[in-house]
Length: 121
Length: 294
Image (cartoon, rainbow over all chains, first blue to last red; front, side):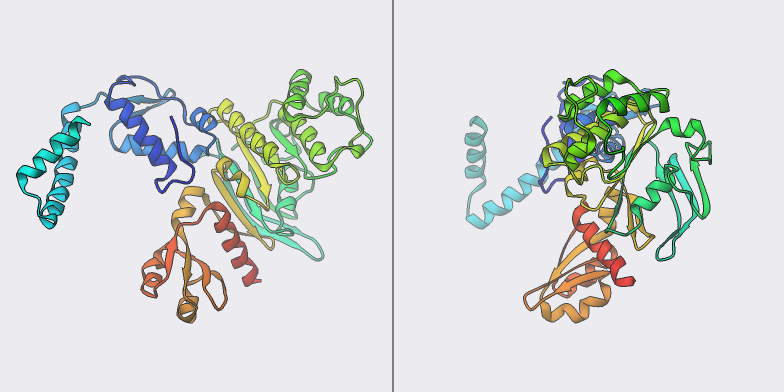
C-alpha cells in the first residue's frame, strides 16, 4: 500500500480505494481478515483515527464487516453489482467524451476509431 | 466511546493562576494531545492526573474503576513522564533502573536497555554512565522516555515529550506511540502535551485545546478539521468578514482567520477562499481565539 501525505485525496480515502481495488480483483479473498486498525496505523505511520475512518468507509460501502472480537473481514462481493457501478461511471465518462467530441467537430465514427487506437496502447 | 480517564469539575487554585473548572473524557485506545500555549495549564493538568499534585476541587475517574490517583493500582497502570528535571540530577541510568524496579512491579530492565539503545542514549548496562546533569535536555528526555516505556502500563501521560527532541527522534517517538497503541489493541492509550503539534500530527487522534486554564475545544482530529475552516480574503472585505471569524490577522495585502465551517458559504460570498485546517493551523487559530477572549 502506498499513500500520499499531501494529496488532495484524504488519506482515509486513499486507503479505502486501495483495499477496494485489491478486494475487487481478488487479491484479498472473501472472508479474509484485514490488518487491525492500530497495526495498519503503525505500519503506515499515520493516526489510528485515519485508518479507523478508512475501515468505516469500506464498511458503509459493504466491502467489509466488523466482527466482534476479531476485527474486519472481507464480505462476499457481488461482482455483478460492482460491474454495474463501474458501467454507470463509464457511461458518464463517455458522455463527457461525446460532449467534447461535438465541440471539436469529431464524428461518432472518428470517436470510435480514437477509442480503438487508445485501447491498444 | 469508552474513556480511559475522565474528570468533572476539576479545579486547581493558585494565587496567580486558576486551572478549571475542567470536565472532560479522554477516549480509550487512542493518542490524545493536550495542546496549548505556554502557561495554558497543560502541566498542571498532567500533574493532577498523575497524582504529583492534588486538585482543589473535582473528581477524576481512571479506567472506569478508581478515583484515587494515589492508589497503587492506578500508579502501576499509569506511565508518567515529566517535561524536565524528572530525575535527581546526579542520577545515572543505573540509579533510574534500580529506583523504577523498586517503585513499580512491572519495570523490565532488559527492555529499558533495549529502549535506551533504540533512542540512542546510554543505559544502566553502559560501562561509563553520565549523571543526568551532564546530559543535554534531549538526551535526558530520551532516557526518561526509555524508562517509562520499559514499564508495562495501560496509559502513558507524557508532558512535552517531543519538545526537546530533534525531528528524527520525534518521528521515532511517534512510532513508539503507534506501537504502544497497537500492542494494546484498543486497551492502551497515550496522552501527551505539546505546544508544537506539527511533527506529532500523524500520531494524534484526539485533541484537547487549552488556553488560560480552561479547555477551549475537544474532539477527534478528523471531526475538528471538518468543523472549522481557514479563511483568506482581500483586505477590503475584512470588515464584513470579521464578525464570522473566531480569530484573525490582517494587513494591507490579505486577511486570514479561523471560522466555523457552517459559515463557509457566507464567507465565500465575500470573495474569500476557504480550506479545512491542518491540526497545526487549527491550533494556531484556536489558541489565538482563546488569547483574544482573555
